[in-house]
Image (cartoon, rainbow, N blue to C red; front, top):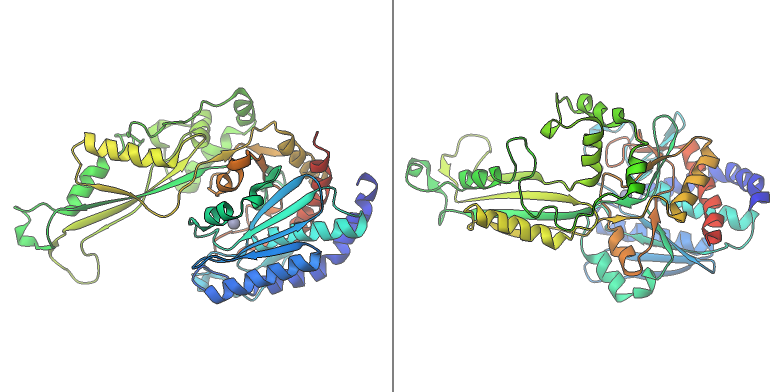
Length: 454
Ligand SMILES: [Zn+2]
């Protein structure tokens, strides 16, 4: 659409005020996981919006699950836009400058829960199609919006929906839910996400909580759990579980070349952010960056046992629990993590500590950084923002892209306009108006690039 860039960009500028009204209407729906009614309302809202775009829409239902909305427009090579209409809980409400579900524009930024993650990014892609059709003509490819309602909580329903409707996965590439722009205004293109394995450890040492006068005779579950946990890390705080790295592939030269473009200060600056003097293992600079990129984590997210409420309760606890999360890198399998932790505990004399899978798990999904899809995202981002891209092999977080992409080996990339001040998941979540418009313009150019990939 080379000739039509001006018309497209003018259209975006003209339509933006009306589009912001639309974003406000979407963001007024408090579609948190605990609010089933609002989830239903948000699903119906986005299905209707996709229909008004001219998309063929299917709203899929499953017992006990939020609806999955699929909207498809255009013909030809298929690009999946992976999005969600659910939002993180808005608490703590007192930290919001304006109420989370009463959207407000202040100083060039649109504030509301979901403005950034993911309602703004989702609508920017819909608006890009609208602007394209209005100023250029029919889309040169098929864009299939996959809009789920359980992204923030994880869970198995997305995989079950897709297993029952395998046509949804039949595509040529997938867009991660959004994209971001760093503090210096440079677009950050991410071509992967980490995977996730969540495990729960449980131990019972007594038939019931004992009077703590028995503590010299009977085993305390909290102590037992602490002893078991202590074996999972070495004295430096680094994982000591054999097999934790099962399946991990060595970095490729292309990946290392991308990593070499990231300034070391990006990682070392985190020492100050977190108020620590050194990273675990004394790693710094390039070694820290490499670990952050290519190594799986092993993290305790919480542990509980006995009594910690007001007043004392002098018991010797009968049971103790801990939750672990492991952020996976290619090509680790989540199931192998459970086996590795189990084998480690057995080998260290903790056969009594039970290991179970808690919550959701899925592998990582990374696309080679030189892939034409990723290069296309880089070109359009640089063209729109006029700044060189910062390339990332993987975002720090996890998303179930493998659940969507693995069946047909779909390449994936980020593309969009949230920024580091966007406060996703936090109070005062927002999105910059200029970056929202930039996201629309990038996406409009991207569909042409995507259609032209040889
Ligand atoms: Zn999200």
